Image (tube, rainbow, N blue to C red; front, side, top):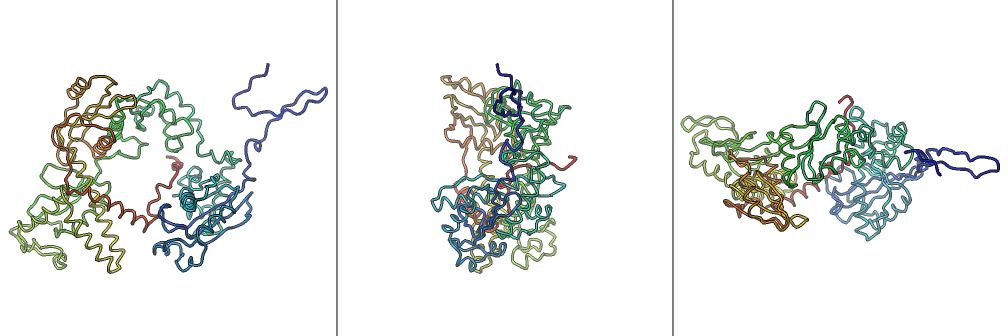
Length: 607
């Protein structure tokens, strides 16, 4: 009978049996567990491109360095002649101009040559999703088979290895200084690849002290599960397999984290496995002592309850939705000569409000758009009808009618204030038309930066107005009952009052709907409407309900009131807004690379 194998024991190698000699077990070495890193060939690659979107931008330069065992085996560098011109911003950033690439090989020559250079190697890149995305897009464009090489992201690795005390961020320039790279990154492909080689070697040296010696261990390093996570697996025991919300609590009962799921038990168990790679979640699990479930009737109820519980408890490890009261509104003040003001709260004072905005900067862009289109006063002083005062420079520029000097009466000024209120509530054409004409004029004068600034202002205003009109269409409904089919041929039911979810339930297959709908309506939460566009719920909750209502298959069961958006509302400009945002991304492709950040990183020491 074979002897039992201990869990986690290494396999033994048995030498050939010799006469009179018992078999001797020899423990495997680390090299037998995978491919030693010293034998792995890495090709560190960097691309320069005309923008950030692989499907609409092109490669302008490929640089790569082949290394193995700490030794450089070869280098690859070529400019690539793109099918379109290089934007001026990119030319300034990289130093690559249309003249430089005019005689360079095209992608159908450069890409196969690079794949031949990197054949059989592990591709390494800093922010690998960016570079690999362009390489894959190039294969699709040339109808080439993607070789599907193994890959490694030094940015992801750095976030797992380094603390914030060592590096405030994981940019290539920061890591190159930390590891004293011989080459300084300069937005040229080969130089950046050479700097990434030194970063890679510095990170591998750190990982060697953590027991990472093989390629397999390196690739799974970001998915390692801490011992503290494994010890807490019992916290998922007894949780129901139902939709709802879960709350991680510390020994004092304080809420550490709030999440939602369609299957509570399955979701919570992932926090104790390799599928949870966020470092802050590992830290949270180490502090948690119990998990409290809140079973919900439907996934929609779970999503709404999550938002409410996060706002109520403000858990330490939740990053979003913790402070709904910090949104910003643009208010048209209630006075003889109204002006635009940024406020945090909405009052029942009859004022017109635009928002909510997630930041003051975006709100200021929308205000600037309104001021560009409408001659509203921008001074903060109170203007008296009877006591004229001095005028500001805006009057001299023709941007204000100077009600402070008595040159503009209340009724004449009210025309401009009313135009703003209509642009916010019904029809934004007064703002859209004026700024569109201004953008066209600036572009005709080749003042492209000024035109882009006006475009950003208009985008902020139109997006806010469209969001407000979409929200107020629902919050103006006294009561709405809707149903959505389930996978088992039943129905999810939701009762919504003034945009707030007040009741939910599930109708089983074949069950009569009338009694359940009546019961849900009778037992639903009573809503006392408050002031402003959000009388009973936060903007996030209303948006959550709207997304559910707009899903295919959702049907209205009862409707008390009118649910409609203005025909000439800001929503009809969403196509233009999308095009404008794409243009902004193409012009400033590296402003926001959050989508390329693949993993969390260790917290600052002592936190």
